[in-house]
Length: 381
Picture 1: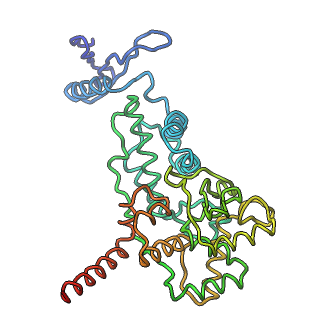
Picture 2: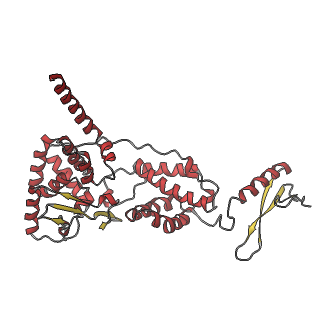
């Protein structure tokens, strides 16, 4: 016979197989209105008493009418549709969707969210670091594992979705909170020194891509922003470029996308040399894009990167990332007296402080030079 307990404490009985069973009420079915009963089992009455107490406490923190309903993959879809698409920038939607469809679902998507553990997430992250890259043409020569930064980004997406599951009383704790994440190695900033610019630009001219790289060095545009430029964005009379979009490869297709931040939408003044170069290009009537592909659409970001590597190699210069041309613009501008706020605005940074932190090595050298100058003035006085 079941041992009666106080209301809300459940009941305990000894079963015919010798084990002890504790039963408790976990709410009502929202459809039928009938009570939902749960049970715990143990070898001794004391063991079941402790299990029963813990189960009842946890049932008060869970919505048992919904708990156990979702696999991780199903919950990621719910989270993306009802949370991410509203809270996250539109330009990040495709990135998040890619993390879910290409990595999370194929590897751990079938696990019920209430059974997902920190250890399983840890194993998942380790796998991504060694063999996580999706097979695509543009990734053919790249490492098979994902970067530490990408794995950390995937972790953030998972953790956000699991936080919502805790809020919705589907799980008690977020298993992502206790994971050890790979450290992101600081990549040394590289630039083209002023004395190498002539060799680089001459080889770019020989290769037929001079205008593309010249304009990037003159403005500090991001690669996607440069490739997204249209003639309607350029006021040649005023010498101004308006940055309004970017180009990226999404699921193998090169397409336009909004810029990532409001600060990225900006206007940049250009020199008369750049204006004259652009006038000559526009007279050729190549289409709506300033730098079109052979078919008239936007150029693939991978193509201009591969061309950059070839130009550098032919010019006898060390390899650079495309982003390093942007660093070159900022470094040369700061070294030649352009103030930090102006450089920050041209780069589309959210604050001059961020620019100052990024290029601290340049500004520190300038401060030392200023200190020496003041020292000389005061000494002479």
